[in-house]
Length: 332
Image (cartoon, rainbow, N blue to C red; front, side, top):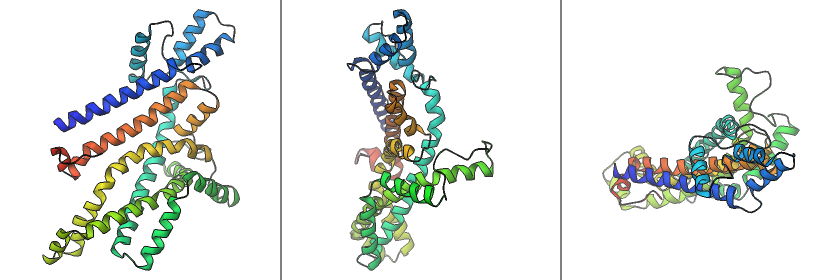
């Protein structure tokens, strides 16, 4: 219970610190969002009172209040889900992100599952056949794939499979004319449209996981307790799954959860390449249009993704390694 309370408190404190940083960027940065929104409305010939109301509407804080009141108002608004109003789309930021969020989560979570599933499987097999042609060739291929950025893979895929061969769509969530809902045509279209972004992340990501798993598994295979297990005539299946796989995957667990936030960050470029309207797509548009409220909203979303990933890793790590709850080891 103490472990749970401690980790929950750390997650909440981190998120409040991020909101405070976001407030500092919005309110205190010279020539920042507040000044930009004020100049934009003053240029439209509005009165000072109307300009102040517009700034409060778009930035979710009243510029005429004392600084501490602005901070408390901003903190309360963010915690209630009021992230201001987009200056480009003229819609609430929370509504824009709420519509875009499921698509980014879909691509990120499916990609993470495939990256670790493929990487762990190949890495474990490479360790068992260490030094063979399979090990050497896949080690080289993994190093090569790891050195290629995901956006380069994405550009190649969208050019070849999207534009040249016309096998996959080059934009959108799903095909036009398809009824949105839980039906086969809609699900198939969603998978078809998300295939290339997911494939880009998987091809650029599973190599590093495979190499890490290979190193961990080789280290575990040399441990004394495995020799004891073999002398006890335990089955190879039990040794592989219960002793080798579990202890080799354990050090990768926290990095896997943190990678959720990294994948959210990757979506800024990835969704622009594939014209996939998720959170990253709107983040890119917000930067291009100097839409500060939307930009700060996506910043909070991506940061919250990292915090949630680490928090889940902390809570679940204790079930995988009981030493974490007793304080003998740390999740990160």
